[in-house]
Length: 483
Image 1 (cartoon, rainbow, N blue to C red):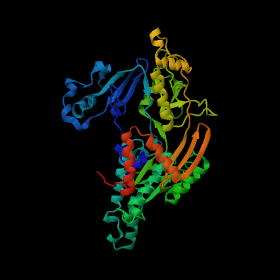
Image 2 (image 1 turned 90 degrees about the horizontal axis):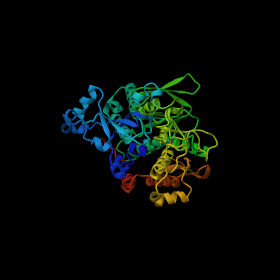
Image 3 (image 1 turned 135 degrees about the horizontal axis):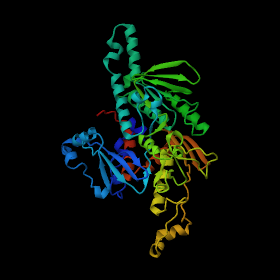
Image 4 (image 1 turned 30 degrees about the vertical axis):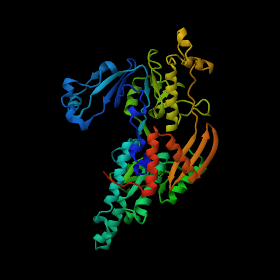
């Protein structure tokens, strides 16, 4: 949905929900960023979020009451770092760094963009990992359209023919957008932007119809085919659909450098490079571990480090620890986890893909194990010995009747892949484990794509808002307002 939000197909607030509303069973929610962990001491350090809009209410807070949270309720200890942290407490409402004790640490922090591997990419590329990323990208696209509409790049502004040509090229640069990465994110964003430009530039009543012949989208992909996780016919259809909408697809092409208003690319195996002037570059080409995961790996044994900076886990999503006492207290799932094999469905011990489908199933698996009360310290998690009265609880009887006194390991059940390619066309690869059900592309596939995304929303409120956004977009077009 982030690609849709980046061009105004849906609004950011329609697809987000406060955690306190989504899960009312959370008694003590702390908004902040995990910055460190003591594996053996079972504590995690949290940098509290800076509340910069309420500076007046928090002045002097650090000196009198460093944190408004109740230490007894949260079992916290205030740990201040350098003077800068304390100063920001006084002026911005940040609570410094707090330390939380835990029985189980569930690590599902996701990943960040791996843009640092290309010179200039980290500084000049937009990402598409969070709703804030899509908000920034939406603003940048709107500003690019407005920048290209200024008189200084219009031919009528000049009398000299050569200057008119230069103005035209500069105008085209200002509305040229590059997307790096041919996976689901890159393909869907390219399709969404084509829809957006068709509406605001291509339609007779479009707000930027004077830029109809100038806007362009370039998709740069290092592989030989788009959407490599999908079957070959669907990969070919993705390429065909994007090219039919005017996307310039560069396959077998590496990004060499990114500047503020240009990119440098080159084909694989060739020393020849090409510099393309443009306005916006979006990175959708790879993932890297977040800083907290790197900190966690420093506290774990060497064999805990998995491929791509992930954390190796066993079938119950437990990471290895240095001592027996701390084993089973840290459960890692989602993009961070590197599960060495898929016992039921895989033919090779390759890591599971970093997708929302895998993360969702692993998150539900962890919740079931903890809710059922399995002892995670044992080599195979088992239900603990209970008293006679507890042994006859409905949950215990139900688990025993199903042979679940020992926790089964995690098995990923692939349900397939979906991708939107623009013009109300999607690609569906529906599976059940290793068994293919059907592959489909077109309008019907688009209806299935939308229905799945709608069903996966956090609440009925989100579902209603997103459905309304889709109706609004069809009736009135995308909102191009910049606030």
